[in-house]
Each structure stands twice: as C-alpha cells, then as structure tokens.
Length: 266
Ligand SMILES: NC(=O)C1=CN([C@@H]2O[C@H](COP(=O)(O)OP(=O)(O)OC[C@H]3O[C@@H](n4cnc5c(N)ncnc54)[C@H](OP(=O)(O)O)[C@@H]3O)[C@@H](O)[C@H]2O)C=CC1
Ligand SMILES: O=C(O)[C@@H]1CCC=N1
Image (cartoon, rainbow, N blue to C red; front, side):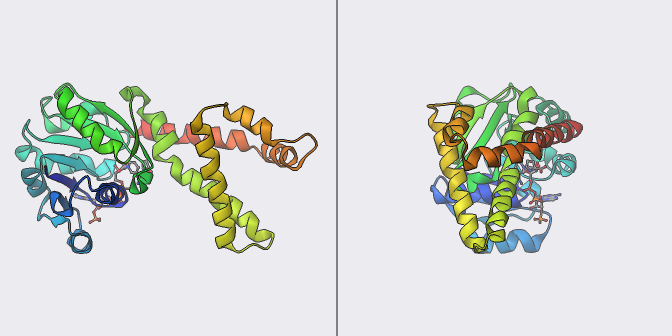
C-alpha cells in the first residue's frame, strides 16, 4: 500500500517518523510533495521517502492521501487534485477547523472517501492522541484499517465532528501548552541555580510520571492533588500561590481561545 503526503511540514514529518519507527511503512511506500521543491526533495533524500513532482502525482500514485497543509491552503490544493481524485482513493484531512462537508464541497463530490483526523505532534514518538471521523463513503473495512495505522502512533478516538474543536484544544494544540508549562518549571529551576538541562529533565519526568499515573485511572487528578498536599506543607503553599495567580483560569481561558479560533476557521 502506498501512502501519500501533500504537505510535508511539522505534522506530516511527525506522522512519517512514527510510522517509520514502528515499520508500519517502508520509506519507499511513502510519497511526498509540498510547496517548495528544496524542502520536500531534501526531506526525501534524508529519509528515503519518494518525492513526487506535483500534488496530483501524489494522488495518482498513492492509495491513501493525507492532506497535511494549513487550512487556508486546503481549497487550492483540492482544486489541483480534484480531477485525479476518484472514489478509489482515501483522502485524510488533518486541517483544523475544516469539516467533512466543506471538504466534499471543495471536491464537488460526496463520493470521495474522506476521513478527518486531528493528530498531535507526539505521534512522532508513538505517544500521540488522534481523533477520527469519516464520511459515508468510507467503508467499515477501510475505516478499521486506517484506524489501525494510527493506533501504531499512540491512542486514537472516534468522536463526533462537533467535538473536534475541543479535541484540538485538549490534544492537537495542547502539547505546546504542556511544553510551555515544562519550560516555565525549568526556568524556575534555573532561577534557583540548576542548569536548564537538569531542570528540564526533572520537570519533564515529573509531567510524564504524573500523566501516567492519571492514565492508570485509579484516582481522579484532584484526589491525587490532595495526596501530594501534606497538611501545612510545601505543595499546598505552592498550589495556592499558583491559584492566586490564576492557574485554573489561565488554562480554561487558553482552551476557550483555542476552541474559538478553531470554530472561526469554519
Ligand atoms: N503542527 C501541529 O501540531 C498540528 C497540525 N495540524 C494540522 O496539520 C496541518 C499542517 O500543519 P503543520 O504541519 O504544522 O504546517 P507546516 O507549516 O509545518 O507545513 C505545511 C506544509 O504544507 C506545504 N504546503 C503549503 N502550500 C502547499 C501547496 N500548495 N501544495 C502542497 N504543499 C503545500 C508546505 O510546504 P513547504 O514545506 O515546501 O513549504 C509544508 O510542507 C494543518 O492543517 C494543521 O491544522 C493538526 C494537528 C497538529
Ligand atoms: O496551531 C494550529 O493551528 C495547529 C492545529 C493543532 C495544532 N496545531
């Protein structure tokens, strides 16, 4: 099976790395094309994936085509590939805020099997979180096969399309917020004399272990907060100072702004 990428920027590269690591695809099964020849040819040379000469060539040669361009470029890319896209190709879009209906309108056909996904960059290390929804032209078999490709990249979840905006906030965009949190912790460590490297490792491992404990699912996160806060201790002093500075409000406002921005793309 050949898989093609139109656009080979941050998200496409993360997916490709995840698949190559798990040997889900060989480099020779992956086709790429993007806006700038230097970029995609250099990437193909480095990784062994195949560079195509146009977006249409990717569609012609691939069984599955991932549209990995920014949302505002999607319409012009679909214009370019419309004539070579038959019902035998599976189209996967990861563009935030662009609905299946809008994609069908752009293709001028409801018969193009299309899956909308929302991955995150952590697929690169096979620890991603990817949401899925499909149109009526995607059979159960194709859907199941496609989902298993993404299962190799981390967790996957089928959700209604109306929930994609909140999913973008909690999973698509949130790695940036979590990296930012880790960096803020690490900077505080530097303030107290640790090297940035030491402080970053300490903070990241604390986030990793905490996330794993939450996912183990034995207690709610809030119960775990209480377990760490010894009466009269250091943690409750720090937590209340963070809350006074608006920790919870800052997070909720950030998620609200992400959701609004995603909805504004429609
Ligand atoms: N980054 C992320 O964490 C996530 C991104 N997404 C979604 O993934 C999509 C891609 O985002 P991201 O990878 O970050 O963006 P990037 O800017 O990193 O990559 C965009 C890619 O699109 C290519 N491109 C631009 N115009 C065209 C065109 N006309 N034809 C073919 N290729 C073109 C660029 O080419 P070139 O490299 O040659 O300039 C580049 O490779 C977006 O829709 C975004 O919403 C979804 C989840 C997470
Ligand atoms: O920032 C963005 O628009 C994309 C969508 C999710 C993550 N990055």
